[in-house]
Image (cartoon, rainbow, N blue to C red):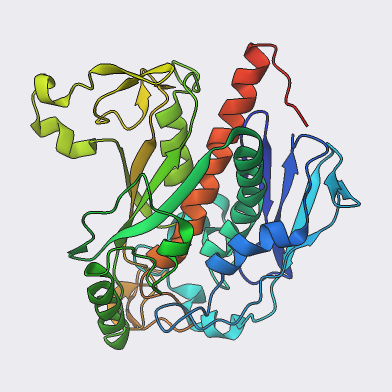
Length: 365
């Protein structure tokens, strides 16, 4: 199983949904970085369950403990082990589903691949695995912000048929994003998104949506063509998040409807650097960052586990009616926001370190 991500800043996540705990090991973090558990906890609090009526009512504090790699509030340059205990498990909720693969869930594919699976809570396919990503991503974000001035902000830009318009990517910040439970900064769209999620929950159903993300102050020159192009690494990172089904950067699929004369980004002088007049490229050209803001979108499907009865088949092929039990989000996108931010930060920090190594550079403490 591939549970490690990154080249120089490497993250290995571990744990299942209903085991004693989940977490991550971070290898490659520079030494002498000021770091406490609270630096990590802020993002975990944004990801944790039970935040509102629109999320699963599983009650987890998701308090992180730093087990190694930090002493007297500073990183040592050695592996950082992070642990978050699971405290509100209810494996009994999944007893009925042990013999029935949930439609569109990973139950069938995990069982087929390994010949065994964690039947309680989805195991490694559960979104609870993302706790390790968010914890590690918080460390990456801290380095990016403090040493390079890079900012990463994500928000909910669509839920079902409701789309947010007019978000200013140059000004959006996390405080504004968190101003509504649905994490949508569009005051017109946010109430409609909330109503749509609550309606799906009342119907024992689920909804998909989209998370948008902007990465500001990214220097030009990041990315490793040809196979580790920056947008390819971002796509890899985003599509590894549970429930994702699509990724587009810059103009994305809509750009295919334009002519090159309209889609091209002409160069202009911006202060002491060369920049682009428009940004249909999404901040990346030829797989390398060009100094403009990187912006992309990630599509999330409706959660597969729903309470509404569905006709399906058990592992023996017998037709059954399955009404899934357990506690599940009717829409994952509000809680996916910090996960998208974390994976973007992991990609960008790894790219920064790889570029610094190429240039024989040295990170300044």
